[in-house]
Each structure stands twice: as C-alpha cells, then as structure tokens.
Length: 87
Image (cartoon, rainbow, N blue to C red; front, top):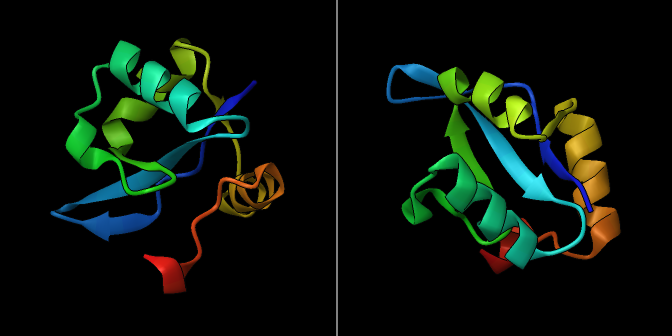
C-alpha cells in the first residue's frame, strides 16, 4: 500500500499542480487525503490534484514522490486508472 505524488508540472490558477494516487485502493487514497486536509473537491476519479506548495507536507505524511511517468505506470498496474475516454 503506497500513496504516490508526482512532480508538479500541470499549470492552472497561477500555480503548478501534481497528482496524488494510491497504488492499491481508492479508499486508501481518500483516507490519506483526509489526513492531509485535502478537500474532496480536488478528487478526480482516480487521483487528487494537489498544488505544488502541498508536496512537502504530503511526503512528510508518507507519500512517495515519483516522476509523472512512474506514477502513471503504477496507477495503471494497480487497475485503478480511469482512462481519458471514460472521464
């Protein structure tokens, strides 16, 4: 059971954003996000969008920082990935 966060590189609202995912369950992801104080509205089917300034706090809580490629690879391997066409 691992929660992963990628490198912030998605621009929106005058800041960069990253993705927070679980490689084992959506329930684990929601529980971690709640502990981290992330609003539920930042959840997007298989990930949370998180602003760059939250990365240090997420890793301090135990999230593993990985590249965007690694995050995507592990999310797909977990079976939790929601494909773009299904969004």
